[in-house]
Amino acid sequence: MTNRRKTVSATLSVLLLCVVLLSACISGPNGNALYTLRPSIQEPLGHEFAALSDMILVMPVHLAPQLQGRHLVRRQSAVESKAAPHHFWSGPLDQQIAGNLISNLKALLATDNIAAFPGPRFGTIRYQVEVEINEFSGDERSFTTGAVYTLSDAAAQTILCRKSFHRTRAIDPPDYSGYVESASQALDDLSKEVAMSLLAARQSQPGSAHEK
Image (tube, rainbow, N blue to C red; front, top):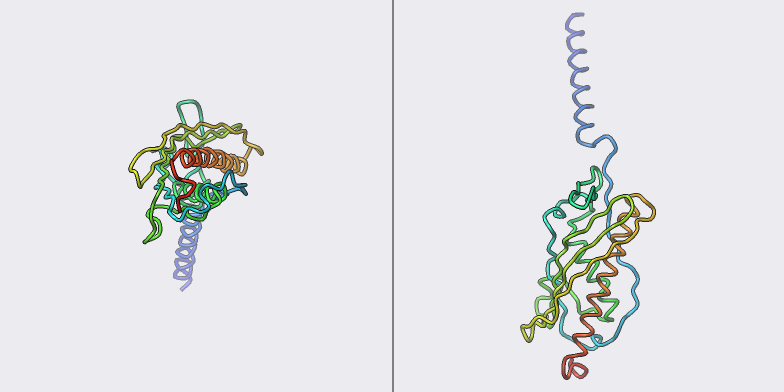
């Protein structure tokens, strides 16, 4: 009977040890941190779109291959970057960037008629915004964003402009919260450039001031 108890006790000890080891493998030694890009409060740059009933459609954001995972990306050198262990975006990065861009453009252009693809079911699409993100990473000192954006007139089926964007911002504080704050500020800068390009295109189109 004593031997049986010893066997049962040893078995339970082994099982408990396995559970502890498995839990450590699942949770990781330090746990995981999740980060969300935040849109800022923006003042309107113009009101040319305020009376327009047609939609501005933001197409799905295209990410470079190294940015398509959920990890934050740390730049090691000019030619090397690595995924940051235990530090993740709270949702798909392409969707977070698109959401920030839409929120910022609504404020900058003073209109709610901006939506992510495919847009409202019965909406009439007038302008399209396409964004390609080639770089969106930082090191312990700075965060760099590289992108190309294309603006199109869906009604005329023409490209209005295609421009490159590059911005480097200091990371302050020099930790992951500063990393994400700098990333958010870079998207604010990108949003302003896109908004100014849309306003310039709108102002250059004949009869746009009277178009509804």
